[in-house]
Length: 404
Ligand SMILES: *Cc1c(COP(=O)(O)O)cnc(C)c1O
Image 1 (spheres, rainbow, N blue to C red):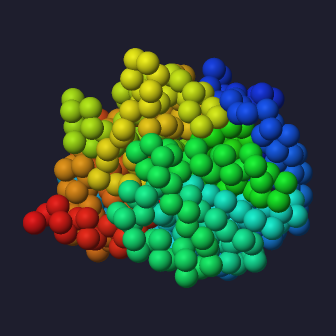
Image 2 (cartoon, rainbow, N blue to C red):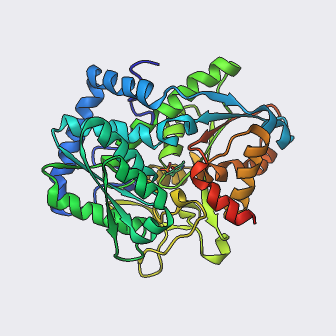
């Protein structure tokens, strides 16, 4: 699996303006245009540079723990009772416990290549902040993480983790004091300090080149899985399923299968308290087209274009936007997007715990919760790959409270 971590685009997208059909682009202040152009230039050069690939691959292997196993979940498959074989792509086994390290390692190395001594990041639950602070410590970079004050209270443990790793956590007190406000503050910081600072965005969102670049860094998930499923079963899967917050673990799993038309893509969003209640984060299922954080995509907004407060039991899915390439996949019909509620996700969490002895993060528990429905729609003998994006240790307290 050497020198494979940066793939060529399977979809030939985005175009030169960073657009995926009508979505994507660069809706940013003039002062950031030069920084985005610089970043794109450095990234494209690194993409072609064998020594950069080798260095990234070495960190992915020896530091993060790649390749991750593709595990046949026999008891889970049997419990579903419809003769479908479920394979789990075990991103939960990576260092720091989730797929986010694939991206932060890539961007950290790019930052060093640009000669910038400082990184900043936004974080909601703190997972991306921890992955960023980890890589900053590893590479000797200064690290400031913006986090909403509400989230800092909810996710105290991750605040401590970031501090122990040498990161500074900056509380954000504007707006709803959550992830979208942290994004705004990180962008503001970047505008001011762009000469010595790289902004490590945590998902396939934001202005071009971020959606493309983060997709490429995360595509190592799908590339490995494509090889592994063939070794295990002699063929490609019938369906690939993943949860969608901003969309990076899903896109990283989907993209290497883009041209395999027989492989269906299913993205699972958070229906929160229920779609009808309005308290959810189902951006692709229920959102409309608009601009948020520098790119055009679906988002949850009211009639006046004001971004709506989202809700999900899983902090990693609790975001009102989604990556523009997913918007394109939805419009073109390449992928299908569905949503499951908090209660269903809790059932998904227990289902995997009881059948396989794996506590999943609440984010991929949404994808697990959709399996019983998915099974009914697939032929007997079908093969499914599910991206298990992270481990559930961080969520045990939340689950315990809910199940009382
Ligand atoms: C952050 C996170 C997500 C959501 O982010 P995506 O960009 O949609 O992948 C999903 N799963 C886990 C475990 C996360 O930490």
